[in-house]
Image 1 (cartoon, one colour):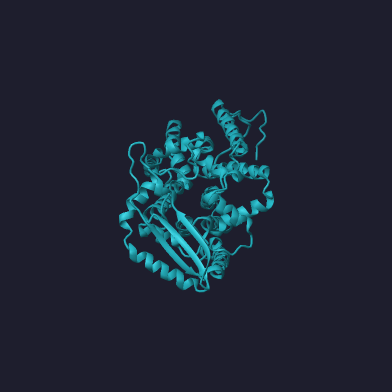
Image 2 (cartoon, rainbow, N blue to C red):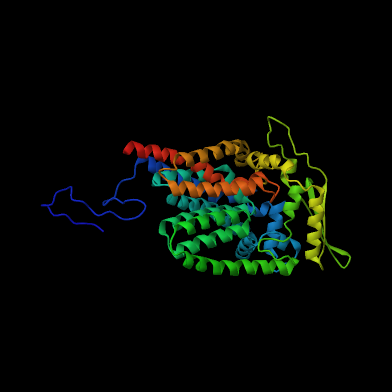
Length: 449
């Protein structure tokens, strides 16, 4: 809305301002040279991400081995009922199945989808930063930072669940801060559903979702309406996923069957073997070993490696899966019931381990990812320092983001949900990289006062 001034009116006549996060000027303003440079860097970064899957050997179909091959096989076998369809969480299976159906295994189409997802991921996180930061320039700086973040560059040339989980975490944070601003029932439901889809892709998002949702639910009004509006679709989704797992394995759980990752983490074994038999005949045999078992996270300063050894054996009767899983878990826990001896190495792998499988030293971006892993731990500390220093000016923003990050650290780092790898820190790398920009924004604001 604008006011037309007559010649008799003074030039200082107050003009109505647009309501929202920022106040828009009444007339177009030419962007500053620094902003133009940022937009040029953004355009270049998007072009590089779109082109990356078209490079020789960078198409996801060129790297069908280990986990990428397992994910692609699950996606192309739409009606498969193998144990892997139950062990792997359903979120990434559904996404990759849609990609497989659309591309029909055509490398060019697969490369287009991979490039678009890589770019869309950074834009989604930029939308979160627009909600989080008060200045658009700060959000643009954060967008540039994650566009050129090596750890978020190479992973999109592979079929890995992180390629969906990272944008889903960004989308969930965007919807969380949008809900904090709008405080409507619709915004609350959108936030909860986004966190749900992230949790169905990687279970570590479930505690983060609980903290964010509960925090805003307590602070906002219309509690009963929001609880029912989100609770009904959430219950329907989780019950459907739990019944699917039950139909495949006999275990009623919405995320995955067995939780063998927990048993693997606390057992002290180096590998895990799963044998599925039916009527005395072996039907499926799987062997898993975490890449961290061959990792030297402190290289080149130390050749330290894990002291784990041996193999954890699971033998599952397909006719009596529920009892077989329970027996296998009990036996695994009996071998090494204490988690604490393995906690320090699990934290080492999380903070200093290289990000497999995008850690090929022959690829320039992967080499950067390997070398820059040393920055994560100090940046993680700096992020909490920033949130503490800015707590007075940004009380709820700092409290909410701090709780989400602490929840991620407590679940991913301190609990034995999984034997950690370097790639498990990827979802929060954008936060620890960009949140310290709050100090820069705070300094700029203090100069203008």
